[in-house]
Image (cartoon, each protein chain N blue to C red):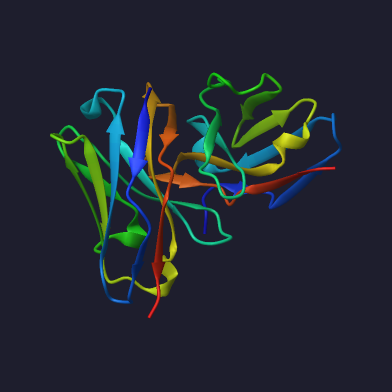
Length: 108
Length: 122
């Protein structure tokens, strides 16, 4: 079982805003990192730290956190944002890393 | 540019071992730890462990303790992941990913290798 919990699936209408959440005790003391994975591809980094985007990631992607919950927000979702999204952080022991179960985002 | 290039696909029989390589380039090899992550077909990402290319220190996921070994060769800037006593449940895509961190509150995996498919089948 994962120490980070994500909703298995979320949908959003084209151009609307969607929030994908990740819950876990370790998030009270460290930031979540978010990865996007499209079918047949390796994951890519989309958000790290407090709210940082690597170069090449559109500014419609943003991250936030409160208590034991981290969120990835896509403001104005595009068709190409349809993918699986995974959160990641250290586990509660601090010695290992863990991924959330992933959220499948569908853009309608 | 920073790049991780992994070895090719493998097919192994149950009980055998497999070794996957990950060659790093474009940065100082010993300055970043390296993670290994796997993904079974249709499933999520599973963290396997991490190695420090500088001293070879490793930390493994408890689930894989005793079956996984991560090593490195600084002369060729390559890290290796060996998994023994393979079973069908080990069939997965295996990825290496460079560790990055700030202070003790933020870590991220970037970039990722292209993945190596390991199939375990009799």
